[in-house]
Length: 82
Image (cartoon, rainbow, N blue to C red):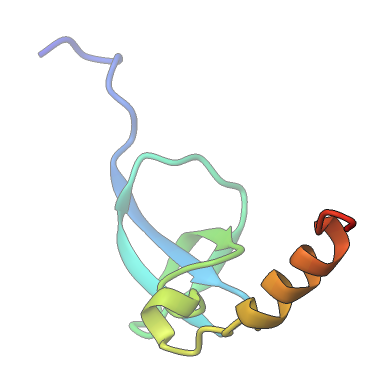
């Protein structure tokens, strides 16, 4: 392999700020932030807006929409006039 062309593959913490869900994994992503992990070491930190810890599909806390009311409202609004 050629030297100097490969990115730095290192441990990185990905953290979802909305639910305090964090995971330590390896990545080549570049970031300036750091965080102290459970093992006492400092790792680069990537802040996430959404993750499996906060996404409705994975948490089961999905919001149900009132589709019947929406359909009726649509039909009333766009119904043909007699």
